[in-house]
Image 1 (tube, rainbow, N blue to C red):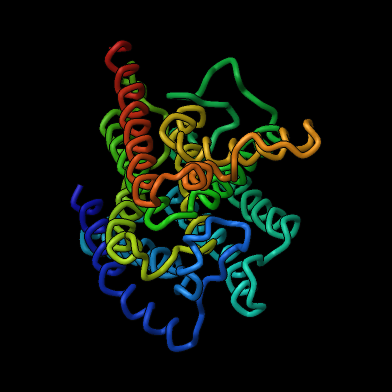
Image 2: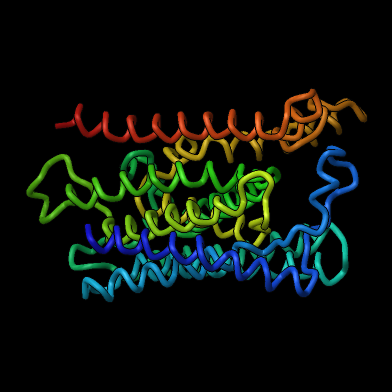
Length: 354
């Protein structure tokens, strides 16, 4: 437990204090965000705001994780290292995208095909590695079964299909988080709730993991307590970052942070055997991604008509007259209710099964 708390506290302190110096560094080099021309006109004032704040967040999470283990002298785990690798890998993809926007002075970075391809490569590396490294019980960090609250016994997949499914989750949630990151503090605040929820799930699994199957209602998960360490480190780092990202934002996460956050959520779902439950816990990311897919599909089917005034979904509400801060707070409420609902579903299954 102390390892988890230390990791969260260290990560929060690093982002709370370190982001200030990162903002100064970026300002001196005029590394600012470029705003899409077809967006709400109120966003024009955000042009030039420093971006790539995800660099500080990722650094804070990695340092927090290792400091937590060092202080308590606990062994690191395969699951923890793999999840950190996924976070850093997708962060690098996002950094490349952010850097191309800055260096070319435009709101678009990597092309969609190139960006998706790099995300998929990182996802493939993670999923293939996560199916290795069995522990003493033969449990690997990831499973070839589709899961809800645990692995679903009758939904086992061949390895190739299992890898495709997991990469789909990683690509989907990393892009969903990226789409959510469009208003000051929106992604940061909602992601805090998601990682707190997963911290609770992970910690509960750690207290009820299957130890030689002595406990009937238990969780066959590898290193759940170590996953809780990363969950809390992510939540703590985001709390510190929100100080600077709340409206009016002094810095943005950028794709560096948003892709890493979404990938972390998907990786957490895969490793905790809650792949379908994440659709509840991370509902806001799902809604934002779905709004874009629905907008594009409706546009093509109706030959130019729009389902929403603008996608992703948060921009639609801005376009109908909601203030930005109103959209953010109401979307936070949705994210919070969804996270609580996900934890209640998870815990409710355990109570009913006991």
